[in-house]
Length: 131
Image (cartoon, rainbow, N blue to C red; front, side, top):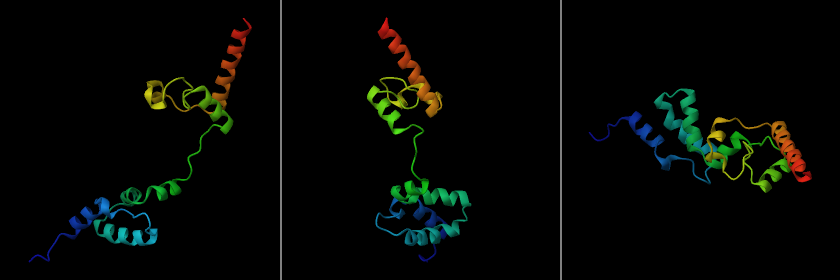
């Protein structure tokens, strides 16, 4: 009587249990064997399987799959922006990027745009110093 259970409900609950996630020292092939055995009866679409897998693997593995995030700015320009206390996206002063509506509404400046804006501001500063 107690042997009957709903395999789909059990597998779905197991898949959403945080303890089911990939362990730090666990090899990916061992985790994937557990994962595929659990998700197979659920008949998820490929996109749902990928989303579930991405959620359950370790953060380190997730970042390795995504690859390094590259900044459009050179190291020299980034150092200059840091020294001046500027936002990397809008080149504004004295705020963190997520604190302004301008930041949220605007797209990131390209390397050339950022360099041009900074060069123009330096020219204005030099003109002000001469006066």
